[in-house]
Amino acid sequence: MADTAYGSCCVDEVGASHVDAECVVHYGHACMSPTSTLPALFIFGKAFINVNACAESLLQCLSVSNKPVLVLYGLEYAHALQDLKSVMSKLLSSRGSNQMLYYSEVAHSSINPSGYHIKDIKLPESHEDAITDGEIIKNGESEVSNKLESGTKYSLGGLTWTTQSEHKMEDHLLFWIGSDNSAFANMVLTFNSCEIVRYDAKEGKLLNDFSQQTRILKRRYFLVEKAKDANIVGIIVGTLGVAGYLHIIQQMKELIEKAGKKCYTIVMGRPNPAKLANFPECDVFVYVSCAQTALLDSKEFLAPVITPFEAVLAFSRGRQWTGEYIMEFQNLMASDATEIVDDNEGARFSFLKGCYVEDHQPQENNGDQKEMPLALAEMTEKALNVRNQCTDSVLFKGTARSGAEYLAARSYQGLNMQYENAPLQSYVVGRTGRASGYDDEIE
Image (tube, rainbow, N blue to C red; front, side):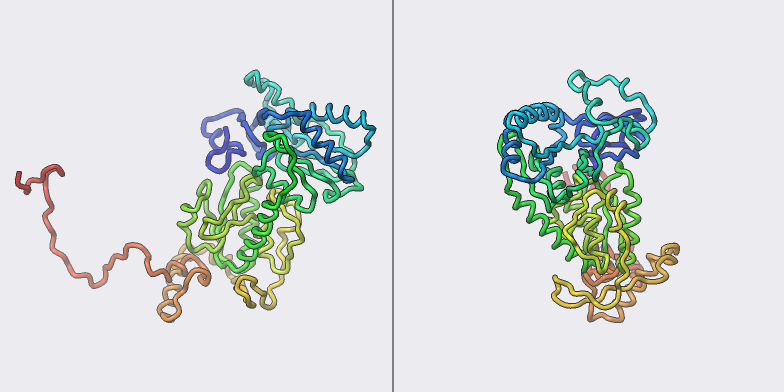
């Protein structure tokens, strides 16, 4: 079962619980966190790849580069990893090359938090070996002990690998096997300081021109600068199956309120321009989802859509972008990036407005206002009073501090029923009969 409400890369854990499923079989990417309460099997498929041609391309990269080479791949090509290792071992031994070559491994192919006997499940014959690739995760821990060398362990897009202690990720050449999809974009943005080449298994050729991905990184920086000038922020819930999504939403709320901005939490399934157009008061949206669906092309949206990491950069005063990019919000929670920086003194320079602006200071009694049942009505009444007192300066998008102020300043607020001093109207007798021929109509 794939999650059709948010993204097919995730497991539809909510849908499985509705049908009392004991285990979920998911064909696709393992986005689901090991802390889930539902056992799951991940079947990645077996896309065609010419192993010998891929090995030749990999050997070409080894011959022209002095850096250690790390092989990453789409999970649909995980079945060919052992064959690639065997062919590369023969080619390197025949040439006497001792250059460092590393391979990433599938992080896990099964999640078994409750100790359920997953291997007792009968799978189709073409996929019976699916649960033997990678590890089986039980209670958030690995049942198979990996003999890893000393170094730093990385995990991205269902893959895991360990680098040597004397090498950083920037020192490696990344060799990606797969198509130009969301998984590849995730890798390019996360390791944007690394040298990257891509082997297209469908075309059978090596590519190293990623100017499009570089433009994407520049646009993300532009969206961060645009989000800094926002007053009303909408938090879009983009996943219900990835562990920690409630925690990161709460962190985003605290970060936004600390920055003196108003936030609203929105649950709408997969976002699109038509859905987000129903919230015109929001200046920017923060999309909390898995890493594979986190990057939305918001050119057609009325307001930009950013990731939680970009929200941290935008709403934390004094924080600078060092080039680091975090796609997984679990990694964002584990790092110190979400720590609120107190730097509210003085104005900041807005690159979009071209002048210095002062951010709205958070209210000290904001916590008390959230407990008041009539908080929204009071804010609306206050906004109406402000509009009546200042009729010449009507609020517009970008200046309103809350949804109530934005609604009060709109010229159209829906059907307006005038009950005060309304003249009494006499009743009118309606027509009788059917629409094809009313009684008062002449045949």
